[in-house]
Image (cartoon, rainbow, N blue to C red):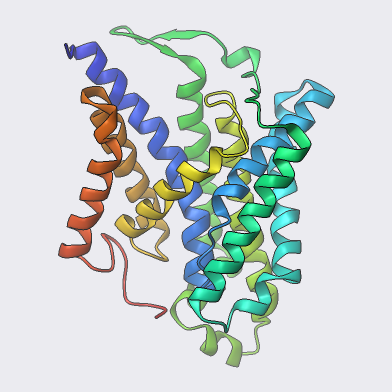
Length: 291
């Protein structure tokens, strides 16, 4: 039986999940919009950020250090990966991009499995955010509420970088016309390196802040990758506001459907994506861009 308390609780769950999906999807949509690369390793990067944070937490027992380590490790990893491999596939067909990033995802997962084993592991939430919050009409885990705030701050920071800085202006111009940006004398290669690094960093940051909620396993990135691609399609490929809107919509669809029957959560998510594609082929906030 569905009660008012259960319904509100699921709404908040959907908000927390939606904020997390928005954060992960923002990195994915920036990478594709700017670089034109379909990154199937994005889910593995989400997982890798969680494990990098786990290793830091085991060494220091500090959640703050774990978050910093998971975030910075994926920034560095993304930059190195772009310089060594991804840059060679910008002009290649999308099929080649899919294959190489899919292969990278498999390698990342298996290396993590060999290093940490397949057993699930957890990163405890910081003590200050542990426990339950009394919201008056229901009790709710404090850390889940904190995650909403953390994601909101991270998304606001990304928004300010994209829309209020010179780098953001170049990135948005690159989404529209990378050739024109290059002709203006801007080092597009360096911009692409930074963009891929920032996209990987967003995934890694999301991976470590999600670790106290969902146990870490080497395969944790697979499900999140599917959800993230759906979010990007719903919101519009290459659109940062679209990633945020799509994430919030997807989070509520998954959460509210799970309240009735969890088996239909993915079905409803894909049904929503299909409806959006029929009504708006470029997504809710997407525009015609890179083809």
